Length: 151
View 1 (cartoon, rainbow, N blue to C red):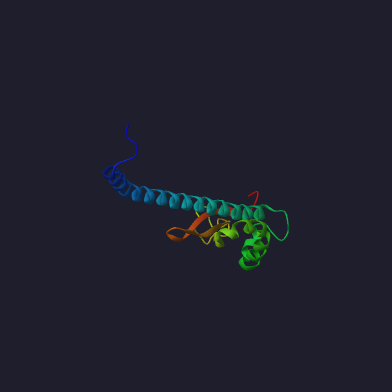
View 2: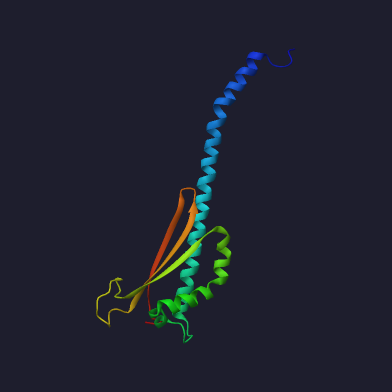
C-alpha cells in the first residue's frame, strides 16, 4: 500500500488549481457585484415609492395647508415635504441615496399643458432617486400624473 503523493502528482494538482481557481473567483466577484447592484436598485425603487406615496397622501389630505393646490407653490410645498419625509429618509441615508421631487406645471390628462384651464387639472410629479452602483452613480425616476382628490 502506497502512502503520500509523488512530486509529479503534486505538481499536476497545483497546475489544475492555478488554472481553475482564478476564473472561479472572478465569477464569484461578478456575481457579488451584480447582487449588490440589484439590492441597491431595489432599495432605490422602495425609496422612490415611499416619497411618491407621501406626495399622493399630501394631495389627498384634508389639511388646509396641503391638497392639490399646495403643489402650486413648489418651494413652500417641497420644504414642508422634506419635513414630512424625515422618518423615511433616515432609513435610506446610510445607503447614500438621495431624492429630488419635481412638480410639473398644470397639464391635461395626457400630461401636456394645453392652455385650457378646464382641461389643465393635472400635475406631473417626478421623483428622482440617486444611488451608487458598481458602475457609478445611477438615477431612478418614477412619475405620476396627479389631480385634485375626488376629481
